[in-house]
Amino acid sequence: MTDTAERCRLVILISGRGSNMQAIVDTVRENKLNAQICAVISNKKDAAGLEWAQQRGIKTHVVEHKHYPDREAFDNDLARVIDAYQPDYVLLAGFMRILTAGFVERYARRLINIHPSLLPLFPGLNTHQLAIDSGMQWHGCTVHFVTSVLDSGPILAQGVVPILAGDTAQALSERLLDKEHQVFSQVVRWLAEDRISLDDSNVVRVRDIASRAFV
Ligand code: GRF
Image (cartoon, rainbow, N blue to C red):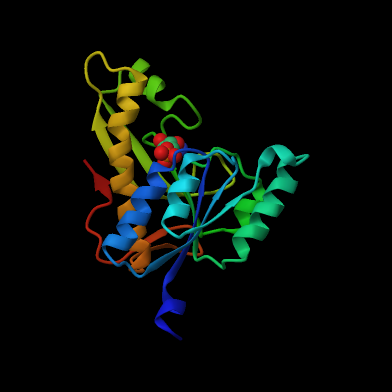
């Protein structure tokens, strides 16, 4: 096998600005990780992250969910585009679509999401406001393997930021975003170095990782 064939193959799915995707791409390239960003795929054609990726020579695709009659038809086409790259992992980096159980099953142990809360707290939308309203003093992000239960699944890593007096959801989301970039990039480094994985019993297995908590 050539070096290239052995590299960890990544496909990244986005829906918007793609700042997490950018952080991952920069981390892979600047640190010469044993990983390859095979493609960036968006369900929205005006996603800002697409242009950023193109400018860096990364293949991009648009699979617009609005052109499909139902989730299954969309997911099938999305899977067709993804599978052409034979990825080791599919990273959901701000991909704002709920995926069908069939899709999740197809990529079992290979599908990874970042969610802007300390799961299992606050699955779904509006996480920043919910954290403020609950009186929490910490907010966080979670990188996790995807299962058919929304924003659930075995946790790879988490990061926290303080909630400050007078915080708005906007201010808090901006503070958390930096932490998201740090946590997701570190997880990608572990994947590239084959130091973290999900075993057949859905238990996260690690090698030489002392902590998966980022403060
Ligand atoms: C991030 O906050 C992510 O956690 C959430 O959507 C946002 C996407 O941001 N799922 P970006 O597109 O990576 O900049």
